[in-house]
Length: 280
Image (cartoon, rainbow, N blue to C red; front, side, top):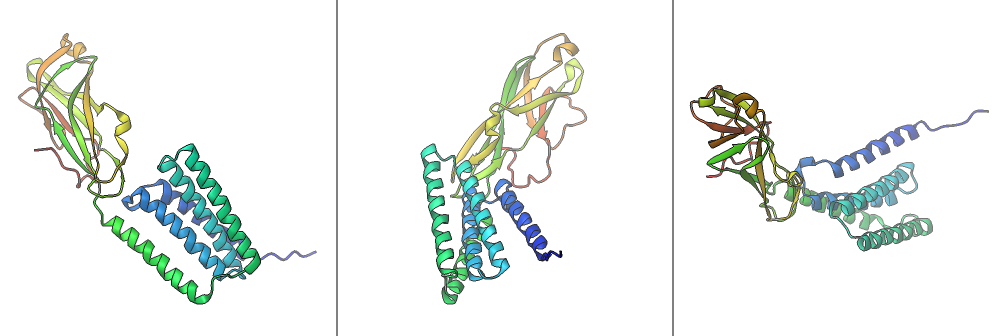
């Protein structure tokens, strides 16, 4: 008994799978540095666009594929929006209820009328949705991105076994929509000529690690303290304290220094052209 199988279904299935992976990747990754609102709106507009295409081609197999992609886009939009904007329990309940009614209503229309969007309306809707999507994306892409400004204290007293604040970094969002950000990472090296200490590594990190990345609201500003942790100093000098250490931001740890200083530098300097260092 021969069973007919349309091999195009394999290709359609692969296309659907890759499209869904693309939706998820778009939602989870900072693609084109888009704002969370822009990504959420783009996924919803994509859902509407794919549904309209599916309805226009509802008699063909590709129309059913568009319906599947439309539903997948909406699910990704819903999960991303609820988690990213931290909806309350009541808000999640309301959104899920609305989504159920929405798809039940659309399913009823498709079942009863088949193609319920006429050709003229279809053209207008496609042009409108694509135009809105393009405008949103272009407006966001050319919008301001988070700016980082580092300010280091002039001097610090170190005590082994305790962390010392050495400055702070200010994150500013000039855009009116919220932006995701990740502050740069730093390293440090200590020079104490009188103790014959050259390039003693110093751990540099943020006092509150939860603020080192996240979302900053539109036109908002966040200040994150930076601290340094001196280790192995006692083992080298038999003392646990070093005072009046100057702090300086440099491109990289110098090979030598004739003064007592902590040099702070970027751990990964590539791709940080937009960062301002240091504050005046």
